[in-house]
Image (tube, rainbow, N blue to C red; front, side, top):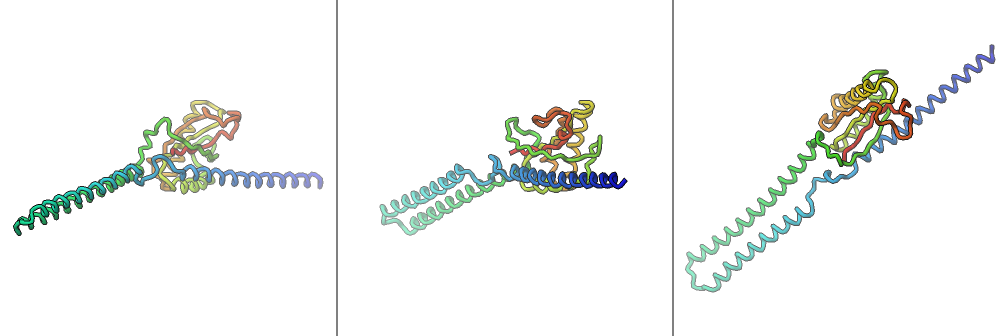
Length: 252
């Protein structure tokens, strides 16, 4: 009897150790995946910079330089005219000075217009980046995929408490930039294919709704997709439960 009790206690301790070990491993994996997602969100992209391009800067400098040349040329023409005719009347001198003032005023106005145009261009580009059109992502867009084993209640799209905690961490990273993000739901191949496809879509929707309504990530940036069992993890049996996951694909 004592031997049986000791065996049960030993087995229980073994189970507890296994659970604790699995928890530590999952914590490390989750941390690594969060870091991957952060790198994907903060990586520079072709459309990310809102600063002026070198061409625009050079164009502005050239415009200013040209205006300076025009201003100088006009002043020289006026000076030459003034020097050629030393017998100008006082009235003509006033007219020359007025013309000089007008030339300088026109030059300053042109510079102001150039600066304003440059500011408007920068503002428009900033607005375009802030309000991305995530409904029309190019087929050749660069995607960085990071997967998380988000847990749902059995046979439903209801998030578990642990899943919500993970999504809270994911939301903080998604808020680092305004990239479009594909949210893909995946299942294993057990059960009906069509049912799995629908369930995966519902679960992706559930994640998107949580991120947008409860955490504040812009809904316009998130695209929910259901993949069912059509894309199992590479080199893994499609029936393996590890295929039940949510993949976040960041559009660079």
